[in-house]
Image 1 (cartoon, rainbow over the protein chains, first blue to last red):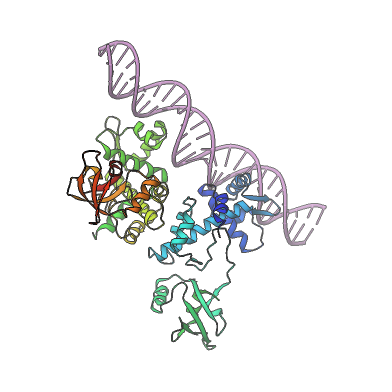
Image 2: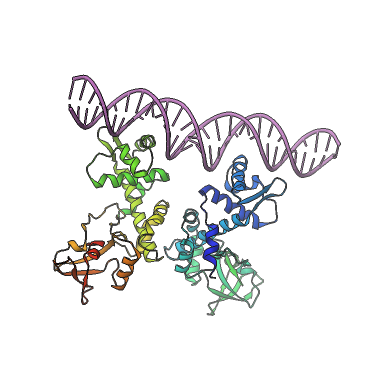
Length: 231
Length: 231
DNA sequence: GAATATTTTTAGTCTTGCCTAATTTTGTGG
DNA sequence: CCACAAAATTAGGCAAGACTAAAAATATTC
């Protein structure tokens, strides 16, 4: 753990807001598949124009944040990847902060975190991380990259996919409607809650579960499809 | 207190980062004195060019955030003042957050708060305020504007100016050297700490005080000059 | 109140990051 | 491999917000 301050500092050069958004999008496009990352794909993700993207790709190549070959598409350099992961780290940590400390709801945090992720300070992410108790996942169940830029390759699934008899941990929700969130509150389910899948009922695909090793409860398929967990 | 949500919403139109910085600077220049706020003064405060300022003043006039007459200088409209105060409110609340929750030191918080003050979300300031326990002052001893845009007109002074026999409350520091901050820690003095001024020694202007009604301690004039308090 | 100094304003540029339209390159199907 | 479709690129522009240099307006001083 101790070398991370040095590692962070190499990756903490300041980029413009726009550059940061490109890096983030390129990172996300890159892990999704081994599909070529093209200017068009980036333009779609950023809701802008391929011509604008080509402009920016040149800048990012100059700054050695990406590699770009027409035939192979875009690829982050180590430097670019580090920057992208730091932004994602900050985004997810701020989401946890907004949810847990400021009592925002799961569907409100993303938009604010989109702004907060661009705050620059060498120690900010690590201090926030510590303050929040080193959370592993954000409210959407996505893993938070470590200070050194490692990200758990979590096998995230939905409750209805869990094997009978196994215990899983809630990492997020797919549905952020207030009716769902209220139901969760009623069942005393939050992030990190341990749920054991007792039995699946073939008739209507409802699921019998035990929350926090408590008494058995039956929930609907819709419910079990909306809860993100990992085993 | 209850009407503040309505009041806030009228003032929460989104301005550009640059506009927000102009509003803030104009506000600060305006309360300092009844001196005319000129393009030159604003340019100095923003470290930019009077010509640039004139450009921006036109925009701010168009948006009804300021009034501007060559002879009388710049003045914030009610709308502009409300926006400025919300920015200052956010700035000071974030400073408290950074100091108290993320354990930044008193001299580090300003720069980060300069970025955080521009995060836009209708409920953010109020939620942060609540989370922090409705602090009255930021770490520099400046009052935090209320949700409705009221700002206490605090009579801030230094410890050495306090009358003998009176009790005051620490609101900030003038010196942020680590030696001073460490000394404060040793004396168990932080923001909000109550200090009673027992006696002033004419010989060297040192001061006998009681911290939190504890035993008397003597501190130097330098120390008493560096501690911001209000009575 | 004229002369001078200062301040304000105008005019014209620059950079960033976006746009549209046109062109070139690449890829695909027959 | 030719024709056509799709994607990438170039060229030329625009808006925001800064700049410099020069002109106009205002203040100050004798």
